[in-house]
Amino acid sequence: MLPAIASIVLEATGAQSIENSSVIQSLWSGYGHIVRLSLSGGAYPSVILKHIKLPEAGSHPRGWNTGLSHQRKIRSYQVEAYWYQHYAVDCAQDCVVPECLSVKVLENETFLVLTDLNAAGYDARKSSVEARDIQACLAWLASFHATFMDTNMGTNMGTKADGLWECGTYWHLDTRPDELAALSDVSLREAAPLIDQKLRQCRYQTLVHGDAKLANFCFNLNHLTLEFSLADTTLGVAAVDFQYIGRGCGMKDVAYFIGSCLNEQDCEAMESQLLDFYFSVLRHRLAEKGLGVNVLELEREWRDLYPVAWADFHRFIKGWSPDHWKINSYSEKLTKRVIEDLQP
Image 1 (cartoon, rainbow, N blue to C red):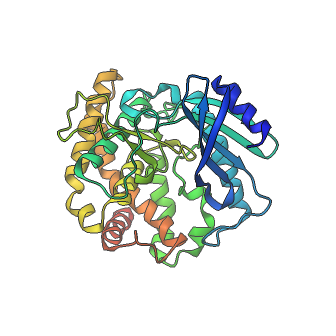
Image 2 (cartoon, one colour; image 1 turned 60 degrees about the vertical axis):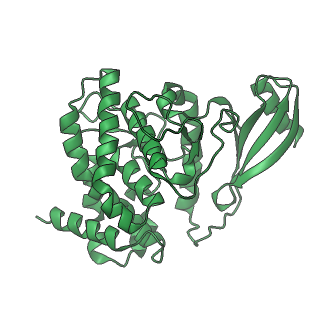
């Protein structure tokens, strides 16, 4: 490790030395790496270093390598750094995130030094899920959405997203004109602005994670419970990767998460029970926080927007990768219904 980088880590952690390092993963399109560093002589046995280094010319795995794509990625890393510096502190035990120890921004590099969730017990990753895993992640999302819930409904000024995306999620329409232009589904392409508008104009807004897929959740198997209780504040799950956090309807995260870990048959068969569970936790968390939100009104609005949020992502994925496994009959059916409901 270069001395200048090691110096950033040692200053942030108070450690005496870096004993070893291992690359966890490369960032999308060659924009850097995420590295685990083992330390000695300080308060942290290990930390995570997210090293973002902007390439002179990127190469996108699916060919989406445009100036807009590059600018979107640059903005996403700025947003993530701002999130960790100014917002993450508000996340409690019911929506665990890493603690940010340092942010250093140089000419074309950014360094985020974060606490290691593995060292905190969240050392399991899942490629397939059981019921308790889904519940833990949905409870995390409900707790997160309650934490950042808009408390000034109707004015469009409640949930502050200063420094974050004005419209959260990595697929939102304003940043995806190339994928929209490539979309061969004419009815969906024409309905895309109305779908986006319906989500943007919903009365109840919060901060959405923006990339709440299964791969971005870390599990503590010792804390996962077979029987979930609303009294549980330690959920056995934490989340990472806040590049696309911003203002939005919580159904964006919920629909995207469910689609990331269940096949189309289970998405359809379990839709009602999963939404029932999410809203039961959301109601409980909002009541705990005493925010004065009309939870029945919120739930009514967001349940109606669940298929709209699903159609919004479906619009992106069909334009981005027409042969993607997430394009299925359930998604097509939901989207068709949404488009029909939008007709005057």
